[in-house]
Image (tube, rainbow, N blue to C red; front, top):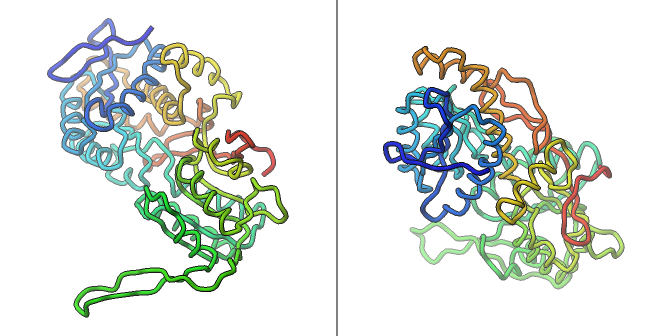
Length: 401
């Protein structure tokens, strides 16, 4: 049974039966350009809510914008029974929501993966593992456990790509490995020729400027005719569609990816963004790629099968890792509320303080996405695992590494 929605002071309220019950506030983009993602996350919370019928849930729309996130958190903070907030999703709106929650003394667990956003203050918790943490984990496993000596990094030149690439580089360097090449490309490009040719030494960067008053711009020029593959593993912190596209260009410059099955192959590495349906379009070139992830509908972890079945029955699609993580964090928030909200007659400020302490006091638990916890610093703890892509383009937990 899914949740009903009413309206309370302009805020959507997912109701319980008793108004005196403690409430969890949920901030999601239910309008604007990210409304489909917000609704999908709310769908996952609808499943989780069935396991916490004793709690009221108040849902506020952020509109996917910073100002909307601030207004949503402010409205939740004024609700007399909202003792904790969950969400929103995007980095910018999560930071705005965190600032407002910190100012108003409302504990909030952000569904953001932006590393460091928890430093806004003791009322702010980050619920999801950052791309930097994933990159460090993959690099550490490859360098320390497998002792792979040489790496190349091919990354999208945006905030996400740079954060993951530089984090991977630092761990590899500190572990004594060599990073022989770091090449950026523009997200959304469909022609990756320049990037992959620079990766294998067929092009080199040079600085050009037409004006002495303007800073030089980086361009690449073609040199030589034979590619030089001087790395043993290639890290690409990007989504499945981009990685599938890149593998075709890498094959064209004779980079022997593991999926080719020919001779000495290059190990492809990624983060959780790699998992996705577009890998099946890579003609098997992504097969054997290793990446970090937390959730799989076939993982066998307790509760995963029931959650997946309920989700499929209700929404006619498979849940994603975000769906599973949102479910887990809702259940954790519900536990913190039960532990901290012990006096229904106490002022909201006192109850919120006890709930804030409870968020990090709960011992590590195993949810749909594995063993996890929230640290007193506000950062998430998560036991990451390595996954491998099979010949059909589907990832699964690997015991090989």
